[in-house]
Length: 365
Ligand code: NAD
Image (cartoon, rainbow, N blue to C red; front, side, top):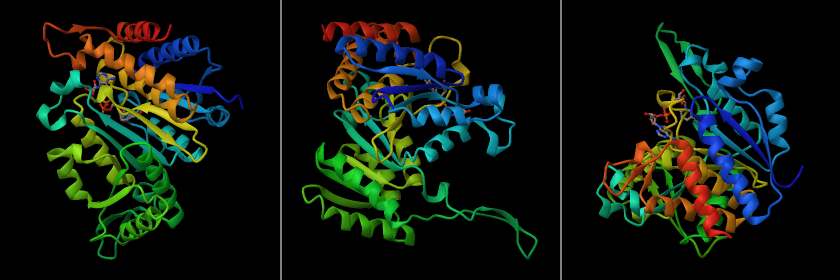
């Protein structure tokens, strides 16, 4: 494995449009910092179903295993909606996450000062928001067995799922959350429902136990219903939140809305070797595909996370983030974050990518 191999999986609908801007950014950073980085391409999702009969072919898994990091656009769309659940494009994502054991999903929610008016919440509640949600991604109720729908003795149909976590699964996500807290403001809030669910009582016990290895981190606990409320009423109280798969799914979408646009939110999913899958939090946006108006910034910010977490190139990550910040403060917007103010200029997907590259060139010369 070349240490800095990046596999790009563009996926469906706006996926290829946004990843091609992100690859332009990778190439610019490679040139500006004189880095040994190689980019290869693979298929996933609907495109893979159409061409290879499977949403995540074995060739893609093999390429992923020989890469340090994977950059993914988005998968899915109406074309594949009539397929059985088990053969839909989204299964490709679940497969690659599970095969490479990408158990730690990191979703930052930061407010760019210039976009604080884009959120439906008051800007004074949000100013300076810098929150990281760490979600367990490959276990919990979404994967627990047994599961299914059956007809009971009374002749009524019943659906059931199993919410389970083993101690090692909890401990490894706890460790990564504590480590990330150490790099930030040393405040970790663990979200559970330990007043009702035994599985999350175990979660809380292990978090408390693991905190002994990180005495500098202030660990608190919150029930998930309260956490949902607190994210809306006082989101700046949080630094890092750690939680299980289903609660993390819901809370990270709430935090997405704090920042105003889903087109701005990056994510990383890491395994224990720091290899990672990097992708925007949004989907494949079939309603705007091919129009050249998709916001590429979430994918470009995912590239910054890729340089930080999988390639350990913090300077490169910071330059990308700073470039995005400056482009926004100069008033450049894609249509999803455009408020029609006279200080703003609305750009296409490609123009926004070019603007970020121009800024990187200005910052690193
Ligand atoms: P979506 O995130 O694709 O779109 C929701 C809304 O946000 C749409 O109006 C869309 O135009 C807008 N939007 C999304 N990304 C944008 C961007 N970069 N720039 C500007 N506007 C953007 O969610 P959806 O409509 O519920 O799902 C569409 C498809 O994507 C479905 O097939 C779904 O299964 C799939 N999906 C994939 C992923 C993934 O690949 N990780 C995640 C979520 C949904």
